[in-house]
Image: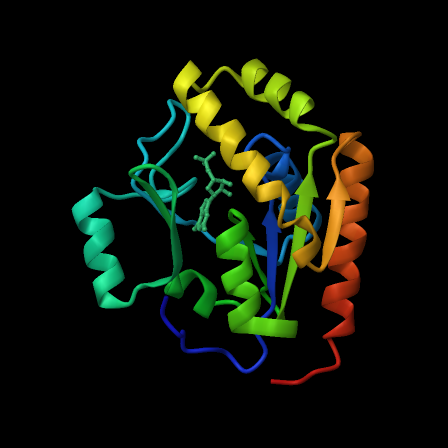
Length: 200
Ligand code: 5GP
């Protein structure tokens, strides 16, 4: 965990949720609704899925390079989300967040807690909650990007992550996607406008 150099008035919007909660879909809708917002591309040691592009979805790093980046202090936070699979937010991605160009993070719960600890009121953390673990299982099975072992690991992890829901600024239940998107957009708009009077 590294303390980052900070802009005077950073604006950090964080979506957090168990894998399969619809967080990535909601993140895409947020970026479409707030064109001035940039997506923070995380570093990871997991292999790319077939459609994923290096530098767009993630910076795909070898475990050695990831470790080196930690030692250099290049990561704001990082987690071993699944055994042997590291994910982390790059300092340089968040450093560029300004009043005019907020940054959007799509990260798991421990990373989100660290962001909140580092940035306090300058960051907002929105927890996207699936209606139930059963629905989550169906969604992950339907996505079919995971084998049986990975699916089980992801469901175990989801149960753990759900226990942290009440630590965040707001919880959006993703039962109906359109309703969840609308609630998320409202919350972010409020956060951004509540801080617009603050000058750097
Ligand atoms: P996936 O493998 O499905 O892309 O991501 C697995 C989990 O890791 C998701 O919950 C995702 O939000 C989270 N994640 C992605 N990037 C980061 C990061 O930089 N830091 C942390 N703590 N979690 C991340």
